Length: 243
Image (cartoon, rainbow, N blue to C red; front, side):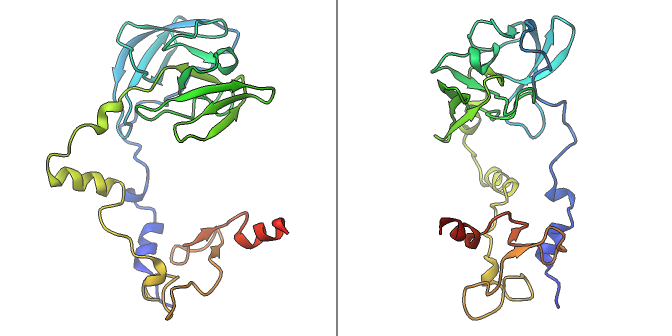
């Protein structure tokens, strides 16, 4: 059987297919403080990290702990932020969701209590505290979807800075090409079923159909690892559940 050059090259895992680790400063997350502890911190610097669209605020807390947090709109070097239960719900402060009133705009939200912040960290993004329920706190995400999170999770009041990065025009074709190439959209992607059998596992045949099961094992070699990789459920399984 012939080997597929495109999928084999992608599956090899070269540098062009891996996330950049060079030039990173530190993990952008909250310090591991307890909720009943109240701390204040000073913004000592605003830095830019490679591969991140939003600026990072370097915060030095009152216990000399230094942390890097995605910078919200309105901060500056010398600004002060506060964290903990009982902290005023004003921009730049970090509070648990149970202490944030409904309708407040928040960012850098913890998905699980204590993880340091996993949601809403992109430049210009923010979510809204929709309601407090017995199951948790309901949030309205930028996509319009609603998500219920544990009320002990922390969030920052405000919006992530850097929303104007998309307003600058490309000015010339080279800049647009670099932007598209970085996102894998510079050239069109041909469907696997439209290719010849020697170039893609789904290729070959007279009809635009795979002709066999598209699920593959997680241990499948790169030349065959395309389609649905180790799926928990497929369409046929969901159809049985409906019945």
